[in-house]
Picture (cartoon, rainbow, N blue to C red):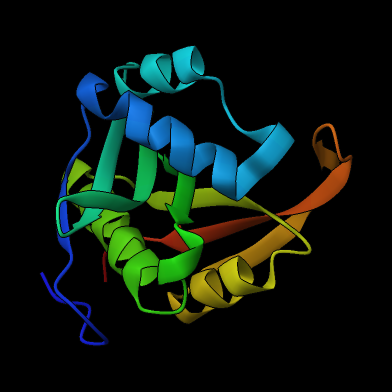
Length: 158
């Protein structure tokens, strides 16, 4: 699958075998706030979870996760290796989450994003997400606020 802005990127479901590579990428992106290796493993196989990875040349360069509770879906994470940011990988991953949420019949797709994460805010705004409100001190240990955002998925009956 091509992002249209560079080499072909292939999306595929993540499995427990991906946890070591995912752990490296998670630590690069989120530093002290990164999930532990065990936390990643638990999350990938958790009930109602779906995780997708973006591969380039057989190497994991991005990943994203979705949680569905039977009504609403929530973006758990979208992460792209720094060397591949700005090349459309994040949008490709987000589009896969939106499509999966629609396929599951979710009414809305929700997410929380750091208020200071400008690239992510631009990504979500370009995909049609609207800001709902601000959560104070949501991200720990940095105590950074988060915007809550939503994307309606189902059309109201006419």
